Image (cartoon, rainbow, N blue to C red; front, side, top):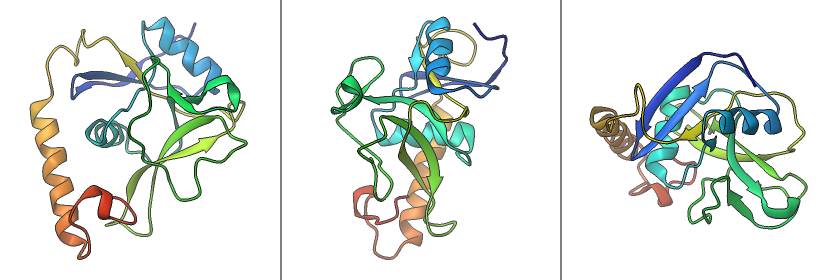
Length: 174
């Protein structure tokens, strides 16, 4: 479907993320992920959310595999998994927007959070991430050093935020 190269391919907490170097509309991004044998990125927990952001920098909106069921219902992951955890930005999700993008946001550098924003599914092209089977270059083993660094960075941010003892307690995320 797309001739592209891979920007990142890494295994985080048992899930392999592939980030192509191109931008696409949401439907074409999903098709590209299917061509790779996967789907738009499924991010079921905080560690994987942070890991995907660490791989990409999160400076621009990026399509992930969270979408409203039947266009206007509850959200579900592209692999069919239920949504059991979320990292919605303030005032999100919006009722008229059925797809989701990740974006780093917050009031300053210490409070930058890995957030999800709802977006129109027919919105403009954007970068995207795929979840694929954990095999192949960069995905055959768990990135233990990467995961340890993520935990260390998060602990440091907790210490810098005086009123923050856990991820859920931080008003602007960590």
